[in-house]
Amino acid sequence: MNDFEKARELLREFKRNTYLFGNHVLKDIGGRVVCGGRRGALIHAEFAGTEDYLSTIRNSIEQAGAELIAQIAGARPNAPREDLLRIADELREANADVIISFGGGSTIDAVKAADVLHVLGGPIDQYFGTGLVTKRLQETACRLTPHVAIQTAASSGAHLTKYSNITDLATSQKKLIVDDVIVPAYPVFDYTVTHNAPPDLTVDGAMDGVAHILEVFYGGIGKPYYETLSKIAHVGISLVVNHLPRIKDSLEDAEAREALCLATDLGAYAIMLGGTNGGHLTSFSLVDILSHGRACALMNPYYTVFFAPAIEKPLRLIGQVFKDAGYISPELTQLKGRDLGTAVAEGMFAFAEAIDFPTTLGQVKGFTQTHIDRALAAAKNPQLKMKLENMPIPLTGAMIDEYMGPILEAAAAGDLALIKNA
Image (cartoon, rainbow, N blue to C red):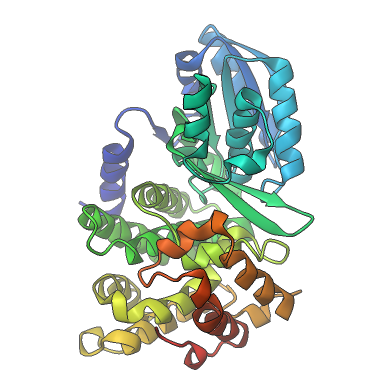
């Protein structure tokens, strides 16, 4: 069984028969919509070819016996709070019995949160954290609107997950709703929609998927789902490491595109088993200078060295993937602890350079000491404490400056030696 077949098998294990995915499935969307209701509101992103896809969606919905009673513009990158509030207002006015989102992670995340506001009211800040939407639904005996989430980018896996990332543009800080009740009931991903995605979006999305797998895998030692994570990590990271460089030479490489879609969907499977940690936590403070996926992936080699003494088992698996692809030279069986983490981090740097991806914060236009200060302050925010708790070496707020500070300084300078192990 090759990696493609293994990935499909894992996704079927993950979502059973609720997930419509693969090539050329968009035409079948109507059947999913009518499972949720007959009067739909469509919230959609805008990108090259959008109108053709929307036509396919509208025709499929009509043929299934449902109708669209509203079309609403999607969200800008990083799901700004302002877009969330606008979408919530328009959903309230439409009062549809099924919601259809069509876009990348930003639009899908905004729609998840907008339906919370539509049904339960605001302010949105009361839902940042874990399980707070479920708590409020139980108190009010309300139910969220059925959500058909149609993904358009191989990236966040928002169509499959319990997360909604919302950004406050005034402070350049991202916050997170984590709740099983916001998982879209009817996820859809037609992989062919990604075939014309531009290079930067393609690379950032794929690296976001790797970050999801990597961070959850690092924190999964001793958990009952560790063996499943091992399968996800080997297949998902292999698909990206072996196929993403091909996109650099041919944007329309259909096999490579499918590999990235499968890999990022596996990233979604990973973050539904466990939580992300260091890379994601820091990324929330870099939204003004980096895309989410780029920020996470840039930081993860540095967190790898910090976590290394506690994660030798997953590091050996991940390191072998990079070694088999030609990005690591040393024999990993001879290394342990921080030395093993350093070797794996350097393999990640070699891969990043092969796809023209930055390896230090210092290479990023607009980066300043202010970003480090903001990230350290955000890490102490109780609303984000789940990221600290998910770390394989958990940190408390009192430990942030001593240990996370050097990680960020190392990422700024590109110097792994600055990292201090706990």
